[in-house]
Image (cartoon, rainbow over the protein chains, first blue to last red):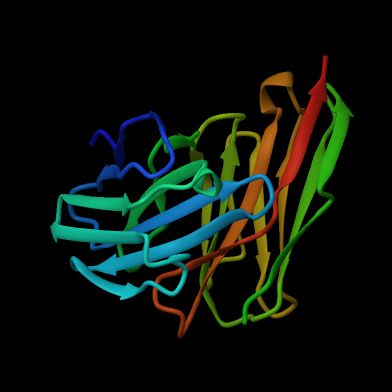
Length: 112
Length: 113
C-alpha cells in the first residue's frame, strides 16, 4: 500500500482565494482525519469521518472551512475564502477501529 | 477531557547515550497509545503502538512501555544516534471519544555526534 496520499505537497495562494486539499486514505481504513499543525498550537484535529460520514467537526475553526468524503477513497478539505492565519501544515490520517493512525506527508499551505 | 503531557519538551544528548522520553495522560480509559516521530518539515511516522492490554512494545532500539493505571508511557531509545534527532510525539486514543487521538506537545530530541 502506498500509504495515505495527500496533494498538493505545497500550496501558495493569495488571501481570498479558494484552496482545496486532497487526501486518499489507505484502502480498508474506515476512519479519516484532518489535522492542522502550527508552531503555536501544535496538532489540532479539525474533523473526522467514519465510513465516509462526518462524526465530529467541532475542530473546524470557521464556516470558511468545509470537508467532504464522497467515497471511501477520497476526501477534500476546502477553505473559502483563505486568510493568512490559515497558513499551516494540514495532515490527513486514516485508521481502522482497532489499529493505529497512519499519517500522510501533509500539505504546507501559505496564504499571502 | 483527556490531557497528554510530554516531558521534557526538548532534550540534547551525546551520541551513544540511552535515553527515556516521558508521556503522561489524565484519563486511563484508553484503547491504545501510539508513539510517532516527526522530522522537520515532514509528516508523522508511527513508531510503536501499544494496545491497552499490553505493557510494552519493542522495535529495534526502541522500547515503549505503558502503565495505564498510573497514566504513563515511556519511550526508551538505546544507543542513540544523530539520525534519531527529531520530535517525538505520543498520542492516546480514548474510550468514549470515538476514534480520536489526543496528542502531547512532543519532545524535541537532538543527538550530537
